[in-house]
Length: 160
Ligand code: GMH
Ligand code: CA
Image (cartoon, rainbow, N blue to C red; front, side, top):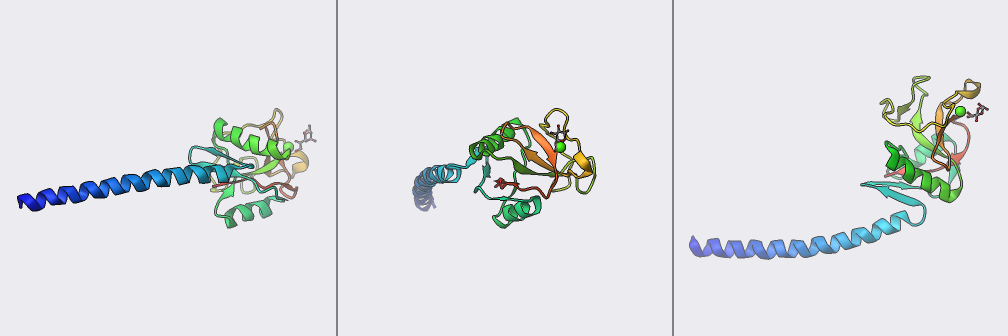
């Protein structure tokens, strides 16, 4: 068993070494695709990618397009994520709809998973439910939020 134990160790060493090489190549290729994903209309925060394709539509249209692409509407959950979303909106000089509404619970804004929001960046005086018809949330190019009618057309901004 002595010899076969040694050769097993050597076999494992060569396998670990091969995996290290493959991991290094994968990391380099991953770094390249991060650049591809964020040029020019994307930003990353941790493992989250925010991205637009320049399309504009109403809330339901945008929501569906993000899901169809394998993501969901951008949902900034902290200041760093809000900054990333703001930068993409500013790049296109357009407001975007977020993945937040009070459609089911008027007056209480929730994520698309029905959980109440734990971060917000409302403009002073918002949300004001203007004309009793504002159940969606737009983010302005300065990063501030405003409740807005879901039928308005805004920039598509998804997260992945
Ligand atoms: C009203 C006023 C404005 C405000 C808009 C906005 C619409 O027209 O209170 O000052 O900017 O509503 O909230 O979504
Ligand atoms: Ca409003």
